[in-house]
Image (cartoon, rainbow, N blue to C red; front, side, top):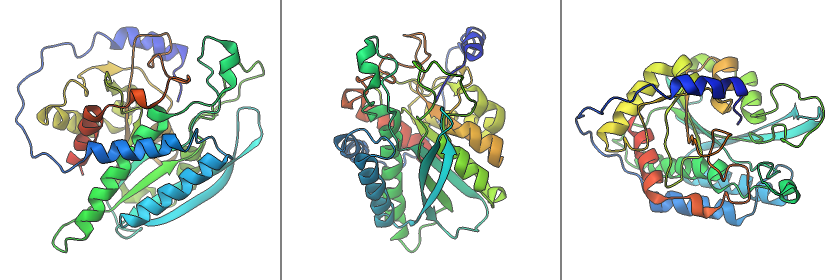
Length: 323
């Protein structure tokens, strides 16, 4: 994902929004979700090594995610394709899609995260480290881990003949983090980020069957805060308000803060733009550095130290509350 200079300027305006004292909210039923389980799914991915496309770790992760979704009752398929990378070369893309309910069933919900890791630590201060791959514990694996735990809970519900499970797709997008590296000196192309979601949204034939979507990205840090991202509000404002209200009722208002935030080009942007599915992004913002993201973003420090079980619990329960 990336944030433009214009987006950072917009942050100066957005930062003053939503600063009033929170009101008391009525509690709601707490969904079943295990942060311990989600943590283990994240740790398993990180132990494979950086899941850079076209590497053995990436293939291992691909197979693991397919097996887990099948284990949890999903009908799994892979979407293969090629997309031009930042240098104009064809990049092989493999999206993983787990279907719950009949594929053509109306009112589907999309849950998504990217499973690839960035090939470059291009935000490292030391230039020599910039060509190392990012471990991708939070930026990638955290969203996948939360969705795997949600899939596990869906699988448990499917075992209950009286339970009703909404039709939904869990999609693990590939090549989200293949965007132009900061050290690249050539002419920058457009749309080099989020190649997997661009492929998925561009080839989707039944977009009208989807009710809404949620993308998870960087959702595991101890100090995580999730303001209302600009594109999310623009395209899926009703669902943003419902989800953030549910978070407050569940006692997770310290994470899902009542503030507006600048736009970010993440997978949800292309799902909204290309497929027309109202989709919101739950993503960690930070004012510590000049990027708009935490200091460990796109560095060697994106490891398991950035994964916190209470944060995973808050995100998992909040997402499941709207399902």
